[in-house]
Length: 312
Image 1 (cartoon, helix red, strand yellow):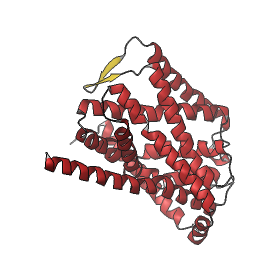
Image 2 (cartoon, one colour; image 1 turned 90 degrees about the horizontal axis):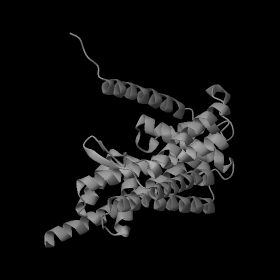
Image 3 (cartoon, rainbow, N blue to C red; image 1 turned 120 degrees about the horizontal axis):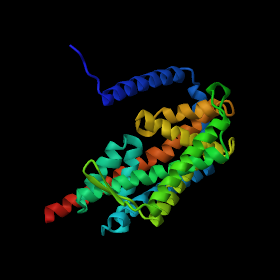
Image 4 (cartoon, rainbow, N blue to C red; image 1 turned 180 degrees about the horizontal axis):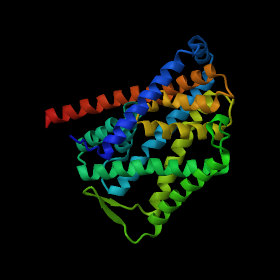
């Protein structure tokens, strides 16, 4: 009997295999780490540095919540701006820690539908939010890789000029997007039964401004925690690489992947125990603290909704 393998199944098998290999390598590496030194590095982080990093994390999450305000303008719904930003913050906190299916998609549908939004508009908001996040990433990565390409470790086999070429390609994608938004005569497509409308050029610039600011403030958190041991463009470049690696592996929060990329790119410049200490603090401030706040806000929203349903 012949077995016909479809492409989605091939991708799934390869992806699972890759994750298993990465997981094995991470576990093997973790056994070689002096965790006592890592703990000491975390405890030695100055309170002032931690507070500044927490402030940068808060700004980054606040800026991210503006993405759904672009979606509000895009769809024309009338939900209050404060509620929109609250939904965006809660969903992003869950998205970071539990994956996009839970936070970015599932929770958005639940919260927005309870606020009276139709599924069609929710789908358009989710789509635009994804585009906003990644078009800003593409522009920012393109600029950083082109203007200030990172000197990669010699054993990577990729030099700065090749990274610069990648940057040029990313910039071309961002320029094409802006060109389409500004000048395309075809403004709408139907993809899998859903209408996708091109934003206006003004809206596209807002998308880029919000997303780039979000990514830049996100990168400023580990940079602050590393206390000047690397310059900011280097920290930004490494974080951008770690982010895309985490997405490619489909691992919620990029757990282990972010650390692996930072260690691979910076361990020749910073002691590994200091790197890991800074990254653990980064996870606590950027991922776990917002998750706790988001969970409490979500519970509060659920309680209010139940009370309204009981009294209705």
